[in-house]
Image (cartoon, rainbow, N blue to C red):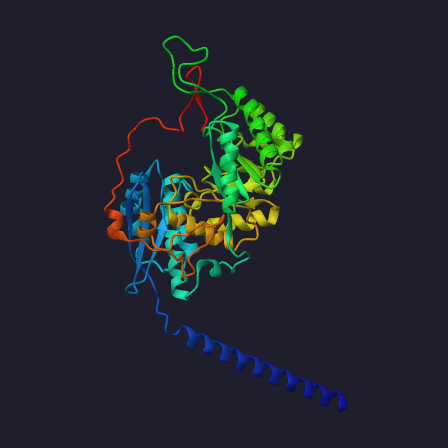
Length: 445
């Protein structure tokens, strides 16, 4: 009898606990319903591109996403200097009809649906268009939640975003003077180049042993370059000491063996990193570099497909993943790259470049602020007219980028002002990315 009484009491306690849990669950559901009852389903009403030269030489493509809630919209970056008109046409003719009417909250689902619909995924134009939409959706999500995007990504893990500046000059003294200018402004990281990409290895027009009636322009010589750049870094270290964190961009100009040799020669100068020693087609050679020296390597600014950067990160053959957020598809993949970097001990170094725009920079900074896998952010500065055209553009007063703390990305676009500065038609000429050797053959940019 005692045993039966105990079992009956135990069963009654279980039933009471279950009823209590059910009541609590119902109360939670009612609370959630009360909190969300005022938020109607939000859909994409209209998507369209906005092209502008920004009052200067820029070739910018922005995406504006209007929603079914009057007055609520988002801004994203789809900029691509070399294919701007193609990207804008893709957004207007192909992507907008596919996106309009979709649920604004389903960011990941829209991202993958767009990629799969294209079938041949992760091409450059698709990624740019998708980046514009993706940033705009995160912008809207933040505005709707009343929070900056970095809060949606988990909140700040740093107070501001450390950036690196760009010092250039025609001689080691000019370069070191340029580095000191940034140090005096508060920067700790500075990229040092001597005459732009390939500088230190450029044979002046008409000089050197040339083919008669052949190529007469500035020509790149990799042996000359590999001799000059370590001497430049030595000069900077002697003149400015060990505190400055030095960066250098090779821009993929070297053959594999010479890339290995340059990395080895730079090891004594404690580089923060050396960027793009090799092109994406030759990433297997990074393993050779890791075998002979500890010079840190950054790579990835022209990657578009995740299958390019995943092995570099997971196999730890690079030290910094260097992608442009608007090239890989927006904030959605950028935060995944940052998490992957954190997992494998690699760091991010999101790319900017002189052709990049403030919306992309703001998006990168929001990911940087919320990422423990962060390493460094390339800086970018724009004239006052751009700050007027894009109010809320992040500023870098002291070597650190500060985002606008407003909800969303914290940046807006004066559309009427942007349209006053149309993008110029492409010239069709070879540019700085088309480098040639002394025999006239192309060098990888």
